[in-house]
Length: 95
Image 1 (cartoon, rainbow, N blue to C red):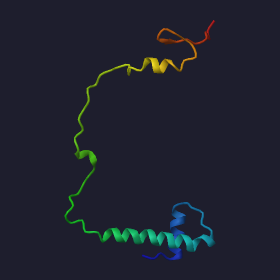
Image 2 (cartoon, one colour):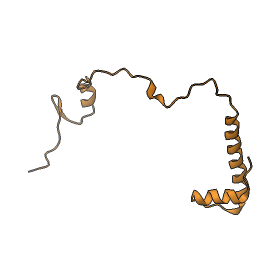
Image 3 (tube, rainbow, N blue to C red):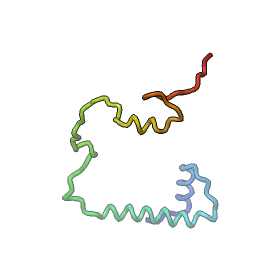
Image 4 (cartoon, rainbow, N blue to C red):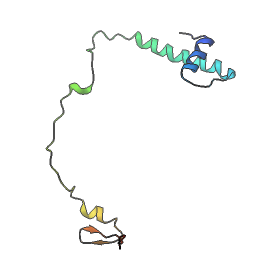
């Protein structure tokens, strides 16, 4: 499919894209090529392919809803500049 210059200008205006006149031929060619690829997709035979509404048809195995501390307390506290036992220590800000 080939787009004319007026259609490209209209697409640019609707897309709120500023289009300089010297860019018009390049953009016209690019948009025409994109529409050509879409036309090629229409030629693909999909008669033997079942329609798919989404990936939600696959049942996911639910995991147990258990609260844990992640078992990485030492890794987390390794980043602390100062600590007392399993806690961060921070300077007192309220007097």
